[in-house]
Length: 84
Image (cartoon, rainbow, N blue to C red; front, side, top):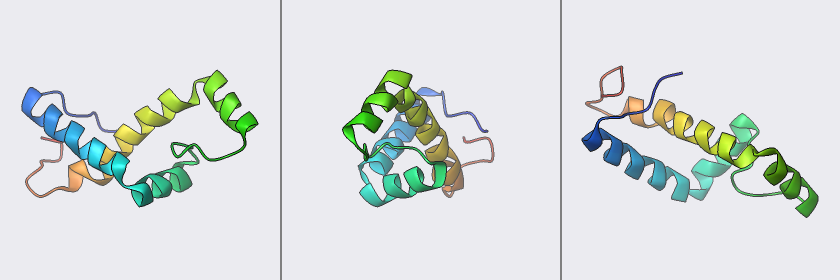
């Protein structure tokens, strides 16, 4: 998997890209469906408690950032293959 941007200018632009993707309910729903994640917090209270206890949300969040990098950021016009 590709690494995410670390240069300050690109990092803030990438952060804005991730935030826009996270705000898009349909995008997050597609991510959850494709990766079997649960960023939308759907499920029974017991399922959500299990997800919380096992630390699933931080792992899903990391996966989401990598997903945005691969599916959105690296495909923008003007972005080189290495993400810059």
